[in-house]
Image 1 (tube, each protein chain N blue to C red):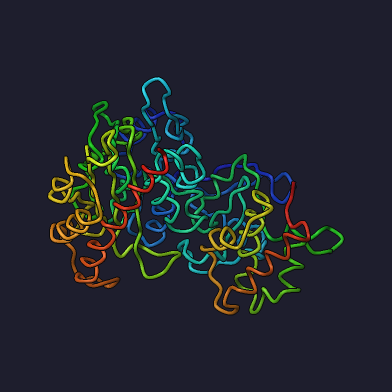
Image 2: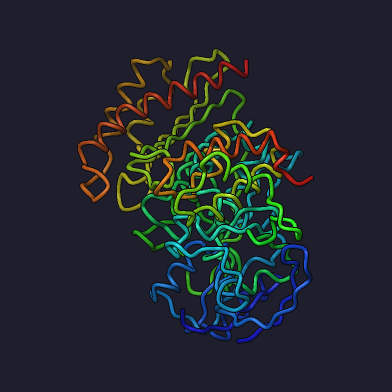
Length: 159
Length: 293
């Protein structure tokens, strides 16, 4: 029932004994203390738990931790530089009012990052399509789309 | 979630073997976007979870250039289909259906095979594959067999799959030269929605670009399982296709449907939308055919 997995988490090589029934969300939050990733619905409908697995945005609440073996995982904790300066997407969400209560922000930003990494010139329709699985109950989404568009100009993608 | 042991076989045979060893207490898992929800809710409580993710051949999407046959491994994700230029160009009805399943996060992980065998009445993935006369290849303890995708479903959440059997892939034979196809997921919201009704239409025309040589009208949420509107298809076959006859086909399809009231919508509304959308999707097929000529 316990499997040893190794994976790359925000650039660090990790080896961990995980229980087979743990979700990736459980591993990150409850076992590793990385509480930036949020649990909303737990059923893959709200996107608060979005992380990036091998360049794809996934709901970590519906992803088994054992399946992270040999994968590259990115979470919100990996975005700011070690000196503390924010990633362009984070800065843009702050500057453009893309954040109100903040609960959806880590998921919103990770979905946005996966999009811009793949498609740095994403237009409004493509942004909407990519963020359709991230629910925000505060902003009304307009400021979020504007934040992503502004981040584009700031070079908010990884090569 | 109850504890289980996770097994990851690398071949279909090995997966069936694992299932045979633990048959009463084992479940297969594909992408997991449905299965993990069921595990969390306690609807499934397996001791062994057999993942199909490491079975290479089940994740392959390719078109055989010699025969023109399209082969979609059951573990191909919705996002892989959505991003495929070949699917976008040659099988627009598949693109229409998979690009609005769940969210991007779900499409990145969820698979076309899982969408089929989960067998919900609202499965978007089933409609295009039925319209394209898809064949499902099944592999189980007793060997391989195939079935038309339209015959996979028995009732909501129930397919013809026997215990231990795996849906390996779906194959689609080449379409006639002048073929257009389109699907609409009609719902109240644009995002994160199950369809109120799903309508897929496929039309093949003769070289005169008017006479219908093949028509498929497939409906989701119009009954307990995905259905084909055979009478409406019969009306179109052999006739010259124009707006008037598509309006007539829409009426017949609406009458043929077995829609009902549910929490998401009323039967009369569903019927009206079938009537209107069969015509619109038919017109879209004509446009696609025209654009290619």
